[in-house]
Image 1 (cartoon, rainbow, N blue to C red):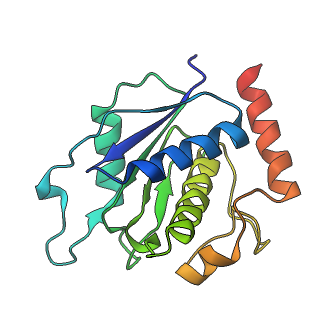
Image 2 (cartoon, rainbow, N blue to C red):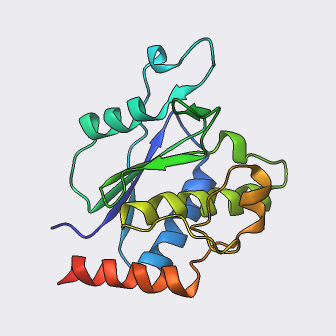
Image 3 (cartoon, rainbow, N blue to C red):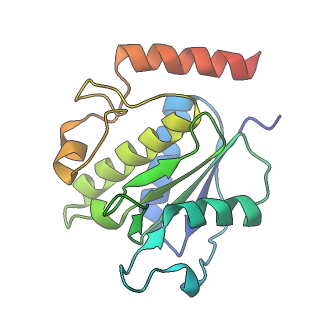
Length: 176
């Protein structure tokens, strides 16, 4: 099994964000991280009445169009995403699966550091789900559910002790 994480840029998200996410993943998950080639999402994926992209369709597209050569694969898109029942999402992932996607659209701020921190938090949260982590009740844990941008800003970039322990158990299963 290839023990690498792949970040897949969708529709040209900013490179400085991708590089920061990559560095953060390497520290937290302790796996090599690759940034793949940019993938253009077809225009007809966009729901024109919402001006958003359906996240399930994006996940399926990633599965169908990205070489399945890594342990985990996360798409990063600079477009607004949604799922039925939600006005928008910051991201979505297959729980204990392989694929995830994060949207930078609602994380944007003119303050570059704030934008970076938000992007790292939400992409780490989504990748955490692929390792079998649920949302956490600890408001400062990166796995805390973010319903609003304020929720994103409150939490830290790191796992609480309980989620860190759960992640280590998950990683040990992969490594053995």
